[in-house]
Length: 150
Image (tube, rainbow, N blue to C red; front, side):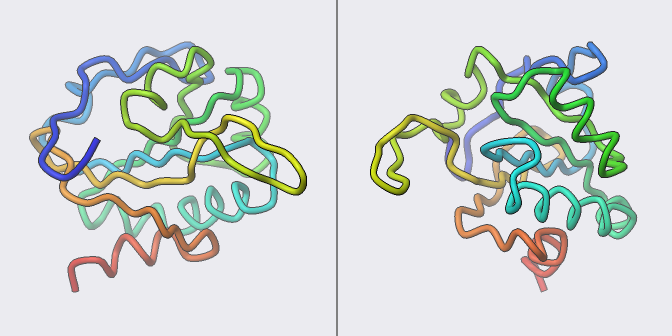
């Protein structure tokens, strides 16, 4: 997905079994952030930054949804442990990761693997991608989003 693209109607199912669609966010701006793995240091920093800035994001008109390939149970534990106030979609079949183009071959240490590239999509009230953040500041993700249009 790139600027100007319309997001798919079906987004996925969260840790509580709720099915989310683009229609659920019609009329609101949406921060849809993709991250590699629940509980890892950078992913925790990013989620906690978004949780800390959640009130300011809501005030600015944003709703927030996280997406990773982790299971619903992993998401539930991660969200509870860090008091995350927004849903986490369990994209275990990689449908959303692939649709948004964030599932890529990566190199870490001495090996290659397939995984999610940390990316944040800013989506407008009509479900159109307005911005894509590929250089995510995990410790200040909420501030990065809020300062984009200043």
